[in-house]
Amino acid sequence: MKFDRRTMMLGAGMAMASACAMARDVEQTPWESWKERFIAPEGRVVDTGNGGISHSEGQGYGMLFAEAADDRATFDRLWGWTNATLSRPDVRLFSWRYDPAALPPVNDPNNATDGDILIGWALMRAARRWHVQEYETASQQIRVAIGTRLTVPVFGRTALLPGLAGFYIGQKATLNLAYYVWPALDAFAKADPEGPWASLIQHGEQLLRESRFGFAGLPTDWIDIDPFGPPRPAAGRPATFGFDAIRIPLYLAMSKRRQMLAPYAGFWRDPAMRPAWIDVFTGAQAPYSLSTGGQAIARVALGKSLVSTSIGPNDDYYSSTLLLLASMV
Image (cartoon, helix red, strand yellow):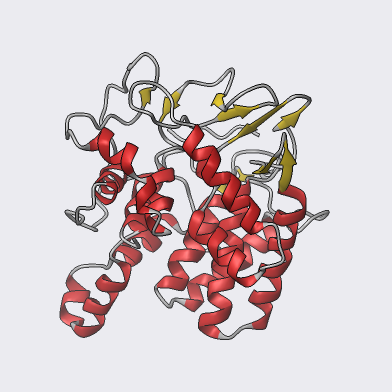
């Protein structure tokens, strides 16, 4: 599996819309904009910045947003498509990618663990909001699969594998610290105190503290761990703090782990130091700045309020999603 991808004052925005029907008619809420722009009629979330594919991550984010907006009809449409199209037959996880231009559209059965976590978390939240046992049962099944198949002992640590296949081979495991969706893992630990979540959280936080590389002390999108030393940037991948790792401070803020935000706040304190990615060793930077959603995450890390929660006309799926997520902090 390889996925290169080159939120929201939702509650406040929707409350304001409910209080003022005239304003709602004139200007969409962030959720309404996101739904209109990125959800196809059948319930497929379209990644407009990645060739129009869909993936389990996007389905999970959409379900999370729909639950937060109390939009059960859209939630059911998203979950129905996800369950029917991406569910694996052998384990209660989801194939990571749907490509409408491919035959078959789901041509890689491997999962993406962050997508599985997001889907399981959204179902848990939906079950409690709308009192639907079917959602809770599905969430429990997904959590069990994540806890038994993807949460594994790796060289003395409890680690979260990014997928079932291809990430733990011999004396090396390759991990993605942005797949640790901290608020979801906290919710799983509270719901399943006998599960592996407390150990996963403890060792994940330790991994994050140890994965501060280069002049700015930032994690890279992917890391390798082995029995011989501390984590290091993953071999064969760019040593960049970029499109994946930018979600790390977002999830830390969403889960109230503000004490762990210091390196990100320090890096972004200078407004000029906000490139879309940076090589943690050489200092080489992207020739373009963070997207709207990325800028929102930087402000969250700095403890500042968001300038706007409106999705702009040029914001693609990923930028818009980061913006809505940042607004949930």
